[in-house]
Length: 124
Image (cartoon, rainbow, N blue to C red; front, side):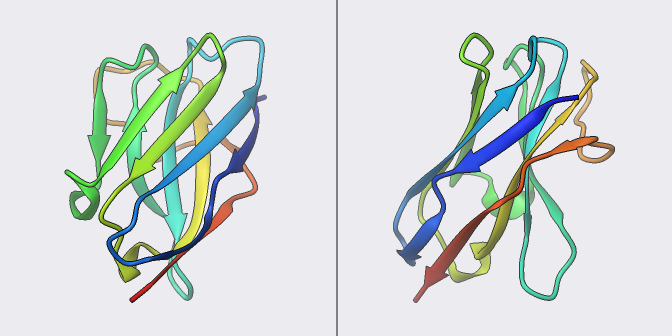
């Protein structure tokens, strides 16, 4: 079991940048694939970005490619999401997630550990 706590959400204007952080309480994160998801009002939670166990592979949902960057520091047990050129459609609650798996493929579902979420609101 991994306990995850997100921070860094806020209210920003379209075109601005924002960084999210997630701190994990676990013996180690080296065997966990990690990801960010988001849930917009009235919509289902959706995958945003994922990163492999060692951090070598990163993958993104199409609408955030080129604007968002996911990163991790396994020694500090943290996951980050750097968001630039934010758009109103990026508004939602952002969740950090971890799955006990190391894979050479993209892992966009099946996560068993979730944070409580942090709100990101982008206004035009």
